[in-house]
Length: 100
View (spheres, rainbow, N blue to C red):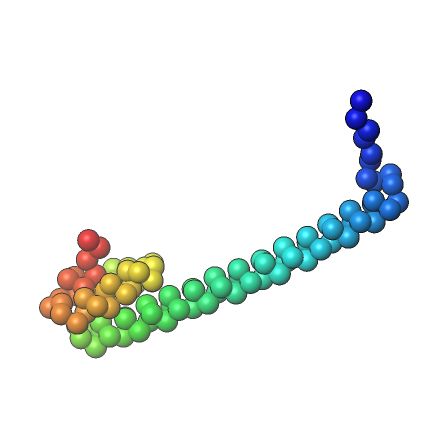
C-alpha cells in the first residue's frame, strides 16, 4: 500500500512547496512582461508601417478615401509590406490595395 503525504501538513515540505510556487509566479510575471513588450513593439512597427504607407499612397494618388484608410488601419504587417512593394509599379490605389 503506497504512503501518501500531504505537503501542506509537513512544515519542511510546505516551505519548499511555497518557495516553488513563488518562483513559478515570478517567472510567469517576467515571461508575461516580456511577451507584452514584444507585442507592443510589433504593434508599434505595424502602426508605423501603416502610417508611412498611407503617406506614400497620398503622395502618389491624393487623399485616401475612407475605405483605404480603414484597410490600412486593419492590415497586418505582411499585407503592408506587400502593398508597399506594389506601390512601386501600381497605377491606381485600388491596384495597390487589392487583397489577392
